[in-house]
Length: 219
Ligand SMILES: Nc1ncnc2c1ncn2[C@@H]1O[C@H](COP(=O)(O)OP(=O)(O)OP(=O)(O)O)[C@@H](O)[C@H]1O
Image 1: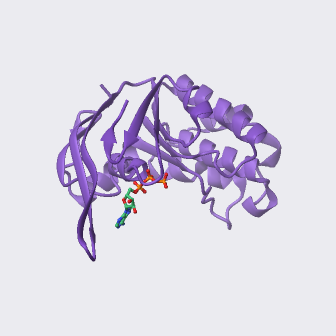
Image 2: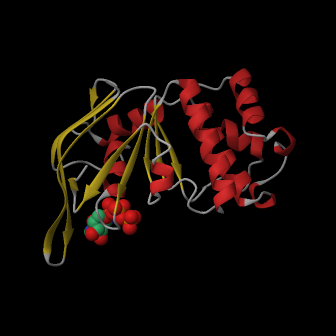
């Protein structure tokens, strides 16, 4: 199993005392499978994604990612796991403005020590970016920027792709096209995909769905 969560609990400190956001989450995701994380605003979706990404630590429970327990890992170990195993795609594209598309695409793969020119060229082709490699992010449309952001993440060949409303900033037609590319490329690499979405329509395109309600799995 690529990802297993067992009894994951998380609270945030607030001025009125701890706010419990996740109350014992259990979930599994296999390599090559995609899972939509849905739920109303404030149900804990982003919190869960951040924990799996190793961006924050759990209060209790276990997160096994590629046989490693990230819940109990220290900051340095979590950072290493993040670079080596996990790829993130967010609603904000966060491209590096001073780098052209080719350099943005290569950036994370180089950081992870996994730059592969042939894979990069294949990705650029699949994402329709060949003619845009010398442009800078500000010279791209939103849909083009999100395709670069997806390419940048997949270039490093992550075993798990975490996406938070990745097409939330795009119009429906562009978002649908970008989503189709993301699903196709994730399937091609055999990675797992965990994606937060508010859209039941998008959630239905993934293999499975986990619905959160007030920090609990509701279906
Ligand atoms: N750093 C924080 N400190 C205190 N409370 C927080 C913090 N981050 C999130 N919360 C609270 O935790 C709860 C869950 O937030 P989270 O962002 O995980 O929800 P979500 O399901 O992703 O919501 P949305 O769909 O609106 O993005 C909310 O009540 C939120 O206000």
